[in-house]
Image (cartoon, rainbow, N blue to C red):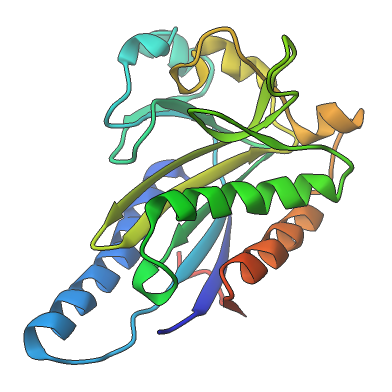
Length: 238
């Protein structure tokens, strides 16, 4: 099993171009797995973890409801936002400046073949990172992601998750609100969940801005331990 994970930080990058890049990396792994099986090879499969920050965009998962987007195309254009239907699970999600988006593209055969465990580990990575800032991140039963004050009238979501997996290869991932303009969430029903608020790290800490480049290594530190991975920094290829 290859537990090495190549880390690439794509910086501020277009959603569609990033999605296409994910698809390339994803397909390379799948193709290698098929080759191994058909030809009896034992070539090790690579793993990737992409960090990115997107311009304003709304994405709808394959099981999502378009009615959860509360603005039309003209209104989206006025707000400088785009919209895509995509091939991950989950409902509608917003990505934008000030948000850390992470896309682990892993061959889970290198780690464990359990999607439920995979999602819980991604949540735990965020929960442990929030704890370093003195915040108690939690899971909300039946609702993927990381929340604060679960079970109270003040429950609010700080991190969304949505993944796709095929042949135990993953893509898409998580979106952690750090300095996000929360006003953009007013134009949607986040993840299709009514009457639940969203929040960001800077709001919770009472700061105008949190240094995003200090959050990323914390996330990676916990990812490395949880997945028992060996992280390798790699120059962005896009």
